[in-house]
Image (cartoon, rainbow, N blue to C red; front, side, top):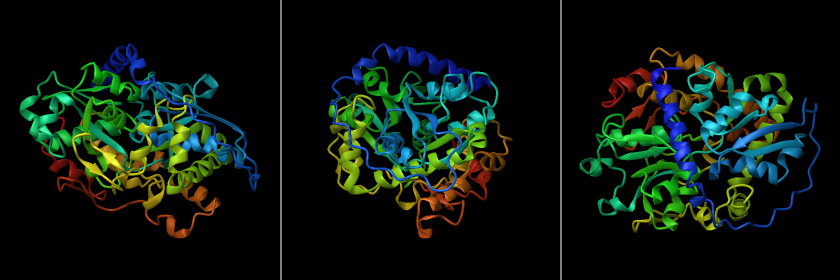
Length: 432
């Protein structure tokens, strides 16, 4: 493990311990909802899966909904995976540790996860053993749907896309929370700060905090801002503790976010079971993205056994109705979370390449990492296509290229996946 990774791991552990003392502050008041009736299922076609059980982890974030819905609505059962367990994880480090253990060691086989994490585990840069744990990334679970929120102490600044407006109000002791070093929220926060001329390594302190502990930590003044998924940004506003400066789709429209990942050895040993799991997840994503199902989805995930938060903290942003908490209200916002439409589920290799390029930018992985080879090793978009065809996805909804092409960010910077080094060379603020 590099010095940077080791330092980040120690910090994660310390903040997790700190946050656990006030965890109860953000988990009370959940309204348990009636369990949704599971529909009659149809038998799996073709060869049956090698095993019928798997243990999958999730963090209490709205973008984990496809795994929860696949369980609650019987999609796993439908494809022969009748013994799937969807298990709540306390934090991303816990998710990582349990994947490293595997179900045979008392852990889990795969998870709802931050897209860069399967790559960092495959490299061995974040594992507790310091050894590679090869992973496969089988699907993107969502695009958009995260936010950067600020404490009420900065309300007069009315912070938005331009982070430079707080540059003279912060210092190295100012804490900007993310969920995991090198993960998506870390990279959104760092990109936003750097675009405004704020160096996240020298001008502020970027600290990891588990998603369910964000609001409680903000409430007691442990941080100035955080980047996390829903429902925690909406809950912050509903409790009048802060406001959202932006939703991350405004930084990069239809950006990739979470992923569905499984251990490589589990998939290689159980290819039919892996395909069945993936089929169920894809069907759940299509279900979640149906506007007619949004209310029911939110009712389900709000239950105590899943998120244990009021449904009011989930439903409006899931519909694309975003109250930023500072007077700005957007209805049917185009940057709302997507689970399926506009190719949200397909794991474009070009997107994974951007994440790895950003992790090089901030020193999380070596500059000489063969990122294209690593993406080819971890990203199993081929299995995604097999599963999509198996459940009857029309050809028009199956991408024909593994690249979405040149991406443009809110500040005008572009990323060409054919030349990631040019993107990296053009960035003004990066790890030296």
